[in-house]
Image (cartoon, rainbow, N blue to C red; front, side, top):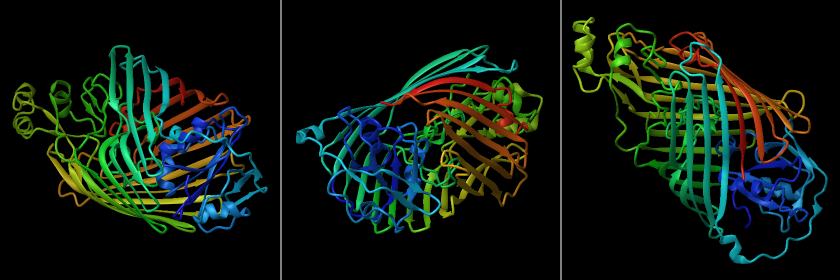
Length: 551
């Protein structure tokens, strides 16, 4: 593991107990270069310290440090003093300590300092066969089984169950070259009036990567999540969304890999990130029979749209097509990790990942001519609705700064083409402004973490009256705490509409005392006005019992 050649943000890790070697080595798949490894007592365990290019690109995959075996994770901004000289060199990017060392300390997040005792020497690891480092490594991350029971008698299903696993082979050829070949399997089962079962195979991140001190180049299927906020990042427009389970999962679990070329160039504290997606991949959506589908044929409803007596019979009896051909797009992001201030600027030529359903012009004309002739309108075109993914220019930026024990994040994006529908059922696009402002803080002790974020979405310069909501305000975030020596975790995710009644609550209790296993019990609650996501799913309240493991 060679010396660090560029400035970084240091992530200080205090293990509650020694994580297994697999837990430490897995961090590389999340973008972490593990620099210091302290061998354990012959049991294959090893605590480690890692560095990142910047917080926003790595924070989502490790937002739950208990999963990889850590009790907490803090970021230390650049150029802040540390009591340990070796740790200072790590933070300032000078070099890596010559020999592995165990750092017995923690991070005072309120001051941004690394505080702890002097590192204790650790016996040198036995020499290994140089060829062993080039051997492929099998990663199973994660295995996930979840059973869900719906509690509303008006729901079309009584149970919604899920199975998922990702399997990958990773090769580290040298200090500069690495490769990954991965695949995933997803199984969905729904029981009730709308029964269905579905199993599907898909590629996971599979790429060839070259890296040195100044740049990283990645070619292949990859998951790139730009943006700085925890949910609904406005500048994340090139990633492939996964809404096969709506919003039941965390943001990092709601993204799919897409074939792309990525070039990351590091110049001092700056990073220039170029991403090119040659072929568009639309969002991964659920089966039509699934309760999580954005199209409800039973009620004649489309998610996000008000109930409309003209549209309802067309949704129920119509035919749906997909417009997902063509190139994907490209994006450029310039970011800087500074002392108390991180920022990023981006410009993108992207396509909307989520579908927007356009009523066929011929069907619309027939319906407006005679609103009572539904059969005639349905026969006017081969496809009644087409799922559109319009291309849009995106110009935006993000900002993060610390104040005491809090971290504030701001992110905004202007979109040239946001899809919408006029009151006379005509498809159009308008300009839009999407922004989020939020704070993350640790009240009390280090175990309690809270985030609160306010989002605004504004449709601009609409020439006609729209069926869509032209202004949306949403407050969302989560509250998380661990207890019993990190063996238990309680968490609440929430999303509350401020301009319209729109509520989503997700309390969860998890036992994580037997790493790498996690057992959890959760509940998903939906409510809201008919034209809101919560209102669309108001009969889909769900109790869940699940098991996750990472090897």
